[in-house]
Image (tube, rainbow, N blue to C red; front, side, top):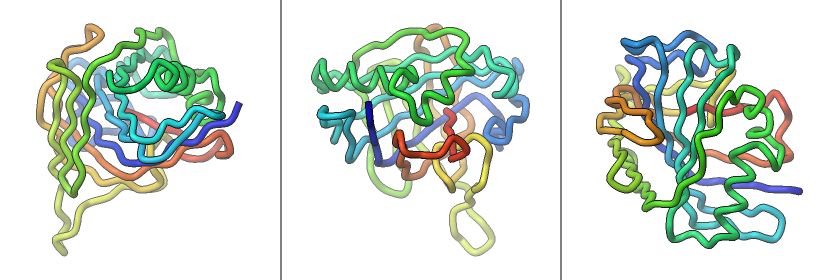
Amino acid sequence: MAWRISGSYAASCSCNLICPCPVDGPPTSADGECKGFIVFGVKEGNLDDTDLSGVNFALYNLFPSNLTAGNWKVGIVIDDGASDEQADALEQICKGEAGGPFGDLANFYGEYLGTERDSVTLSDGDRPSASVGDSSEMAFEPLQGPDGGDVTVKGTMFGFAPEYRIGKGPGKSDRFGLSYEPIYGESADFEFSTEQAADAPTGRA
């Protein structure tokens, strides 16, 4: 079983700026947990013969402590425009059943919250916005450096891209019983595949 997906993403979580989860630090939200959602816009991709190009999906998380402590809660929402075959393929990938970087992450899962279908959107541009039905929405606002460029982070232990932009991610989210007010945000292009080494950027939300 071989798969590859690439495109762009936008994410938000309940941590205060800046979220420490990618460096395996403890969450900085008021309740000490990291609740978040990340929307992936797949521009190109496949699992074996199933074409995944053009499909959006969202990954929801609750990290009760630093990431390597495990016991994550994870659920996914796949755009309702995807076919049943595409939805099944993305579920296999996200649950880690198809191997690759998500297979590595699945070792930290404590509870899988399920797979749902709904409208999942992700806009293009430097300030992407994302939404999942009526339950979740966020608008990425990048932090600016002294030269006017966007602030980025790279080389983290857990990251959905080798380098990603960080900022604010205001909005709302209430899905899978994980209700929170988004604070932190990030965005980048991504590429994952079964060919990635085990020590490649492994992902977060």
